[in-house]
Length: 442
Image (cartoon, rainbow, N blue to C red; front, side, top):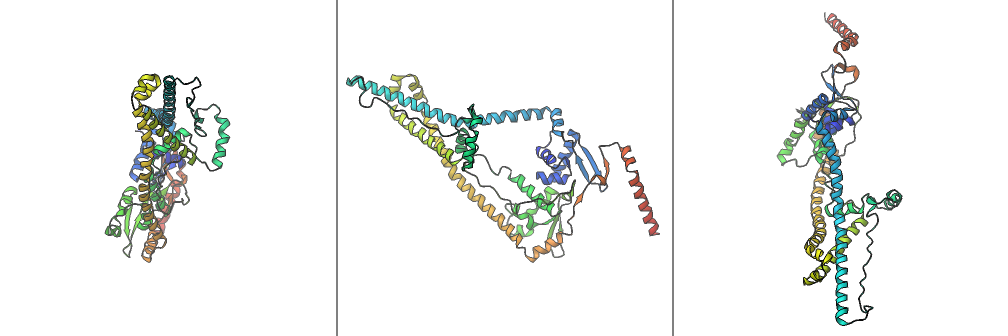
């Protein structure tokens, strides 16, 4: 069984000694998934179980457990290989749009130049003009400066130009993209900034519960949820059901009729932990149009306009269909793919424009959800007497159990007989304590 990547990452971040509650909090996983995943990982990677006298279990993993898994499973090796290959392939896909844009401009510009030269030559021959070509026999092909850093990724003097890029970043250009990457960003953006929103949500909720030592009220969790349902559903706190299911929580009713929520599995930890910082509410990030710098976006848009205009001019020159046949060669080839060039030039400008208006609408909805969560967080800071009473009642269930090496009754690391010998004094002391209690009772 291949381990859950989120569990493996959580184990590494928690220094290879964890409880189920530790992993559930760090990875934002539900308790049952975390428990099954830890058991599978311990079995596959040679981990050890440490059982405390209270019955709580700590999982101890070797620091090279990823290497153990990699050597054990071919699938993991193939996954790592494919991730490396896909990283290269995706980079090539990203820069291909910029390369196509530049090739399109160059190809169209050369075709236009050849056509104009051909038309001028034909005019001179028909009119018997002088050999100098007189009025307009010369066509000036402008030199387009494609902007800084366009091809630095292919440049052999990349290291020498690093200082120039640092200077630009210090002046406000913070983009680390090259121009070819910026073209892809201009067209399609840079991905979903909230791709890990659910992971963040459950991590924050688990952290709030852990910071409050396993006992919370609904008002503390509400700022991290979205739709709380109808008015009666909010009054009945139905929105807490997924949280209870995920972290094995139980509700308790206070004498005043308020409900508090107790999560015993999140009260046990493998090591003393300070309160972790957690945002007051779950904030979704707005979708940026692009992470490329303003100069790169201007250049990408400008070249797109230039490509489209040149395509229109070429279309005018080729509209009668005879000149391409007369000249042949490159012009004939460009004529055969003209609609492809024009389609790419049109889409190059249309896609970012449509995406811009789509992002405006999407970000507006994101801001509305953020506003609602922020209002719930503000309401918690201005807690009513009813909420304060619930918080006070919840503290009765708050506790934290830290399992240290001294608390262990059994571990799979050592031989059972050796463990019994090592704990002989501890066992004798326990028997003496029980005998004394019986004597006192008599």
